[in-house]
Length: 454
Image 1 (cartoon, helix red, strand yellow):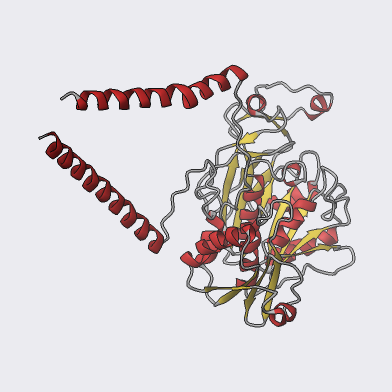
Image 2: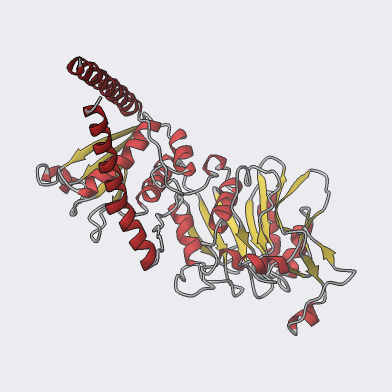
């Protein structure tokens, strides 16, 4: 009798285990075939970014990815995991893995000298990337950003140029070392596929019109009348421009922009509430973004150090929109003489928040203008603060008519740490190594003893 019961229980248990295993195998097979994955990391590190998804959706010609890796290696495995996500989202991406030792001729034809080199080929164009990380043995942490930027460059049929106006004490776009430089901004624009150049209007007679974007960023000396007229002519002819004008500067630029419906206040924005969340009285943190293509689904805070307020002026034929506002606790300090002495206090004639710090204007079908009340927010010091870089690069994409590139760019992996004390470590050790195994053992013995005596 006991034997029969044991046989029945054993058979039931075996059937149950086989059913569960079968279900798991089927689920895994379907997930494998359909590319289903579950990313449980805090920053979705194993999912491609919004920018990558949008870029792949807009790839309209075949791009061959030649991956030069050894047959076995961590870098090859990590790259396979990454590039599978690209292949899954676009049938235009074709990947070929090549062992340089077995096909040295092909490696030589693309001037490949290192394992972990990836060459993206589209027609007669090709872009070579070195993705191997010599320290970890895997691929570099920004591999997705590198791949996506290369796709953007290959997909963009026309090369667009961002011209930074110079000659008035503007910041150096090649300076990566100093906090005030624009080197990081310049590199980010180049990574997005734009050509970045300086423009000395004192020497040139006009702003280049074709596929160009003009950036006037914090001139310390006034623009000459001839230069202002050249900028005005460029905008009237359908030009696209971005202006960054900080307090107590650029009066001639302020006058120019008022003619396009954007009024920069003669003040400094003070926001004591920003100090509580990592900003400062004169570095308002912005988390309010009125509806616009640039701000669609944008959920990151931005920091606008030393900023002036922006208001809109209704003008016929010009559509203006604020795209970033400070908190209700801020105000526009008008007493600049007192401010220069290090004192700021809210008076009855100071405009209360929320205050605009960024705005855009559309004139006709072609002309687009973006205006920021701060220059520092894209300097090397603040460029990577939360959403600053994405916000500015998305604005450039909108200005250039590349709305499909407005997105959140890939994030770098962040090391996760769990801080525990010595006592907590002893408790964890005792629970996992002693208590739980003992409980399981005692329970098993009790069950065995009970069944034995039934």
